[in-house]
Length: 274
Image 1 (cartoon, rainbow, N blue to C red):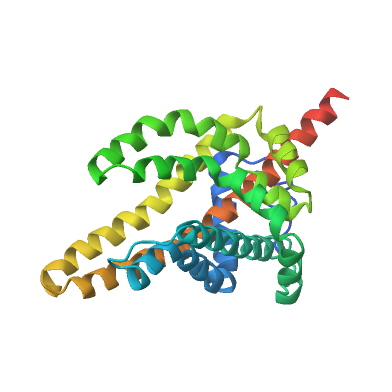
Image 2 (tube, rainbow, N blue to C red):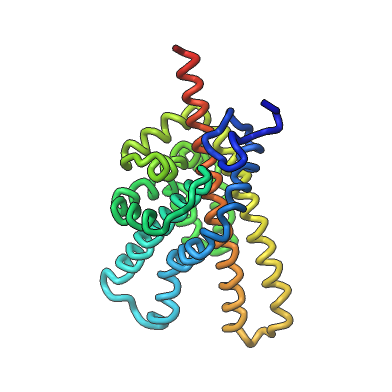
C-alpha cells in the first residue's frame, strides 16, 4: 500500500486501513466534513439556533421581565434535549457518509427518537468538560473570562480528551451510554495526548473562522453606524450562526475519524499482546 494513501477505499473513509497521524486524522476529517457539509448543514444550523434558545427567549420574551420559578431551567432543558437530538442526527449522517452509504432521514430520526434519553448522558459526558469550562468563563466579564479560560483550559484538556469519543462510540457503534463511556475510556486512556493534539488543532481551526467573523463585524461597525445597534446585533448573530453551522459538523467529523483511529490502535495493541 502506498504510504500517501490514508483511507481504505475511494468510496468510503472508514474502516481505516492503518492508524493515522494527527495531521492525517484532520485531513480525513476535513474530507468527511466536505463530503457531508451540504447534507448536514440544515441540521447544524438548527442545532446552533437551538443552543441559542435561552438567549433568544430572554431577548424576545423576557426583556425587562423577571423569570418565573423553574422557567429558566425548563428552557435550558428543552434546548439541551433538542441539541442532543440534532447532534445525533448529524453524527449518524456523517457516519453513513464515511462508510459510503446513503443517509436516510427516516432511519436517522427513528434511531434518535429511540435512543434520545440515553444519548443525553453520552453527549453530556462527551462535551461536559468544555461546557463546564465555558460556564465558568461566562460568570466573569469578557476580559476576566478570557483569563479564566487560559488558566482552566490546561487541566481540562486531559478529561476532555479522555471522554470526547463517547459521542461517536454511542451513535456509531450502537452502544449504550455506559458502554460507550467505558469504550471511549478504554481506547483513549493510553493515547490522551494524541487526542489532545487533535482537539487543540480542531479548536484552532474553528477559532480561525470565529476571528474572521469578528473582524468582519468590526469592519461593518463604521458602515452601520453606532446608533443602529439592532442591525449590528442582527449581523453579528448571523455571522456566529454561520460559524457554528460550519463548526459543528467539522468537530463531529474529527470525533468520528479520531474514534475510528483510536479503535484501530487498540485492536492492534490487543492483537500484538496475543
